[in-house]
Amino acid sequence: MSENNTNADIVSNTFVKQYFHILNEEPHYLHIFYNEPCLFNRHDLATHVKKTFWTKKEVKDEFLAMRYEDYTAEIETSLGIPYPKENGRVIVFVNGYLTRKKDYVRKKFTQTFLLAQQDNGFCVVNDILRFKEMQTQLPTLNPIAPPQKPAATES
Image 1 (spheres, rainbow, N blue to C red):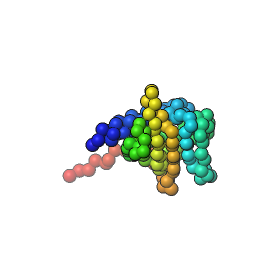
Image 2: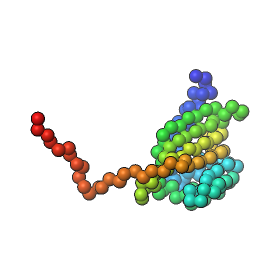
Image 3: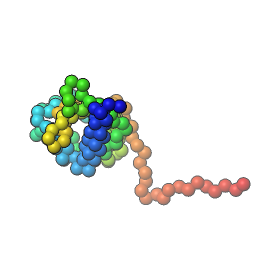
């Protein structure tokens, strides 16, 4: 494995852990990962209309409007590769699930980030999120009922 690939893996793994930790714990701070100008591209969950934002303030406002505090993100896979045309940039691919806390509706997503190196680390300069058509509802557990024990059998 080349040094560029190793560095891309380290940057990618570190970024994904930090980004999705913030998304799950304090989503109102997600905008700190972005720089200006940045390309922030989403499909609206309800209308499926593509939305594009360019400034950090627009990104922050969109995160607040998306109400990520109502969801939990779970990462299935992630991969970081060096950006082939420019040194100090890394492409990060993420697949995962976003689950709404109130009813456990789960949506599969894919997200692609382009990270650029800066003096104090890396920042997002391009972020594209798409939801896949698959949608499931996780079974809910009854917190009041005790877990069922298997019935004893005699031999």
